[in-house]
Image: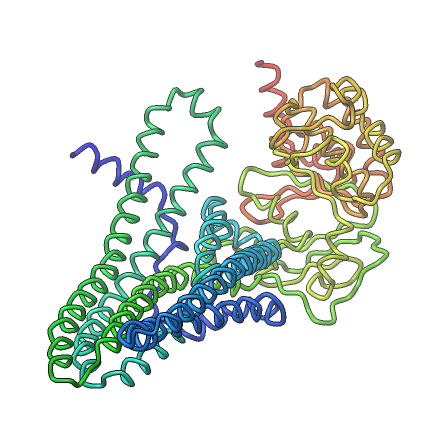
Length: 607
């Protein structure tokens, strides 16, 4: 037990995300109405058809007990009118057939409606998440985002497939049954329903507790997904260090937390059904005892009593289902709060309503007194001013954390500067539309991302309308054509997730071909040659002359041999530019750049 507790504690410490917290709010009907707004697109088709089928089924069910008790028993059986009894039986049979068909159509249309609504919610959420700024993803794991888009959306399925129309059906049924019960025997109805206020008070007390339990369960589910995502992506590291057992222990801890949260939520959820059944049992006992008394005193006929018994059974049925729908509402509220939390998330990088469309970018970049901080504590850039002229090749050099990648992120406007301004062709980036800016910038990273699909689709990712011949030409120019042709299906070879069938060097060559085909005005290479062997690097250096020609290029590199021919080199240290100039100038100056170059050559000689 002590070991299990230790594992659980470790899993909590490792997988606790500050953004994954219980949203403690009262039941918000405005938010529920916002959720139900997703039904609007179907308000002229599926929704009215489902409602009509439900209404037909409900009306038939309300009619049948009266036909059985008042007409079949009193007039048919007690009145000994066999012909009339047969007619009532035929009418009841016909009504059951119509009810059966209406119910089939209702279920069919409601399932279709529910799936369409879930599709719309998931599409809306994914579309919104794609537009959010990088900081949103910096603060959240991929697994927790996956839970919102998949699990939380799926949890709304029962509500939209059955809950909404069933709730309307049960409300109509309940009102109809109560009206009929009072019309048959007001005194018996008051006696039977006296327990309802007690049931209402108990259910009200349970409401908030149950909703919080479902929220807590969703948080644990997010942590489980986050761990799974991290473990699968890092499986090579895990196996390399033989940490499978330890990783399994972490998984067991997170999985146990998820199970316990689910168990507690379902345990609390289970209180509703027995509560309804207990109320039903008490009501049935009152019906038998007090109903028999009313029959004996002549206040209630036998046929009316039979009809009343049917209607009382029908009364508890919608009450029970409303309890279930209420639980669905609680689950939906817990999930919708998490979904709307993301939908209400605003990008920190805002685009102006009348942003400039920079159609013909030259690539002249200016930083004017730029400061930036990722966490409002430590400054990544401190009052940086620099200029990159159109067509120049600029290199950024410095130790890890010196601010090189931050400059690249600001050029692509993944973040906005805390103060100062970044300009391209004289325009502040905050005045330019994001699409026109980023469509003319290509970024090649050290850990390049290859999508599932064919080689051709990956090369054309940045420019899907390009012709196949143009993609092949880009691959040839960059030196990737040879290895692609040697693949089983050439350019139509399906790469696995993240391009696992390719070597690191091949994936990098593919990313260069993708960048070249996109034909950007500005290209950013962030340690793009760090994972490439020396032979491939020589090949890429030749290809880079084609790729960078006529473009403003920003090269971030620790391997200083790759930036000798840069027009200007900026040396950064803890967010400050401490040196600038070309290779020869900086070597002559014998400052920090000179020391970095000498240190690398000594390291290579030692190897």
